[in-house]
Length: 388
Ligand SMILES: Cc1cc2nc3c(=O)[nH]c(=O)nc-3n(C[C@H](O)[C@H](O)[C@H](O)COP(=O)(O)OP(=O)(O)OC[C@H]3O[C@@H](n4cnc5c(N)ncnc54)[C@H](O)[C@@H]3O)c2cc1C
Image (cartoon, rainbow, N blue to C red):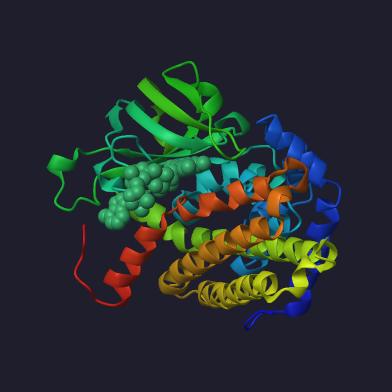
């Protein structure tokens, strides 16, 4: 069910994505997870089918679809047992380029991103010593002639090994010299093939989920001055302008996960017999599944409200943040219920519950942690005093 959207068009997207995902079985995802590998074949199939270019305008070779349609694509991948975290960067990292890039930059990169010839899977914002406090980032880009020279460090930067380009946020004016702390940061489009080994080093971080994520070190990395996107000093604002769409897409991924967990738990509860009857006949087993279902469906309504606001060209900040909050919470609760319903078998890798359990847990922390959404709602929607 969706508010104000063309249901038939959304259903046909669902069917198309499901058809593609059917070629990538649970065993495929399990194997990728166990090998700590990247699902290259899956990502390539999604790219070739055009799904990752959903939001690139038609004039640049994409499908020019809205947020509602794009959100269904990521939802379905997760609902089919896959992990949209391996593809979502290609869908949304181009927002800053699309909204703030020059005509020349858009013409140069967007058609190649749409065709998959170039991958823009990575965005470098987070730093080890500043975390969520983004305006304190220390990575500096200093203009020297026709180049910027970059020094600093980033952490948790995903999919570098599977990307050609990276959006990078760096300070171009030191924090001490700006009037407002949100000023003096800039966005660059970095050619990773040129950068790695020539001032940029990549250190993978072993972690709980299977998409590759890294520490990045910049030691006098030189990039051409025309790598700057938009105006110097406006980078923080540019990053923020893409966040409402990103948060809504992540909410849709969580909803896909939530539905996968609820289907899986319900099926197991119908089939598994203990004490001579299906475990799902016990209200102690069925009620938590029903509760998780209600919460996923409620979160879905907020996701559609966010899509409707965004696609109508309005500021979807409130709805996008609330959708992300509700959906991440609902998918995590559904994961917990699914694992509990499976008893000991929930821990067996071959049931895929523990893998999806780990994957969905990430959404409480990244790309934005739950507390930061609560602080947005407190300050911007409820007028409570700013806490930081
Ligand atoms: C697998 C993975 C992939 C990632 N991929 C990327 C990527 O591609 N690009 C990128 O730039 N980043 C990426 N990140 C980073 C991610 O966005 C951050 O981890 C996240 O924003 C939280 O920042 P932090 O880890 O520095 O936590 P911190 O900022 O250190 O916060 C730690 C905890 O304290 C809480 N906290 C902090 N300040 C407050 C406050 N004022 N009030 C209440 N609570 C507070 C937070 O909510 C959090 O729970 C990734 C992270 C992970 C784990």
